[in-house]
Image (cartoon, rainbow over all chains, first blue to last red; front, side, top):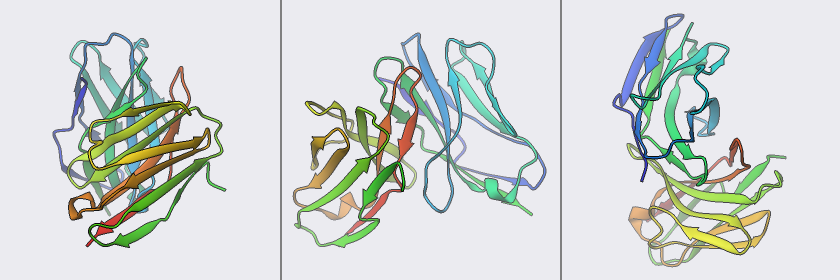
Length: 114
Length: 112
């Protein structure tokens, strides 16, 4: 079974600064997908970024980028130029290539301070 | 209209009552999921379905049942609600290769 660990329950960052959220996972599968989801107070689950394990290049979406270290089973999210709208819960999630079931971490609550 | 619609959005029910949470989708995806979110625990999988005739238990299925009435509809039932089933419930769908997941807006259920 897969496990996903987010070791930072809460974090804060000053507006316009950069913050990194940590995620580690454990799996015996060789092909899989990793995700970061954002959940603002509206409670909607919003996909931030997706990484395919077979791709060595780190995924990037505008101000959001990941540092994917496959050997270390680490998948951190970097948010640059933090904005007040980035305040939310962030969940790291894993999906095996064959199972398609998402396994989530417990989340990191990020607060962006003006 | 939303791609994945959950009803009701909020619900308060009494201990011992039967309750059904409904989910419908317009994505055309075969795969559908029910998750439960509790503070500090993230989202955990209750049931999932890969097509109308394929329904599987997830990590925390005890006390829940599901029905896949059609490709587009997947309902979650609590036969006899108990207070520790108070949570935020999400329905989701996915396509494959690569998987893309679409979540509903959630149902906040309170059992008193």
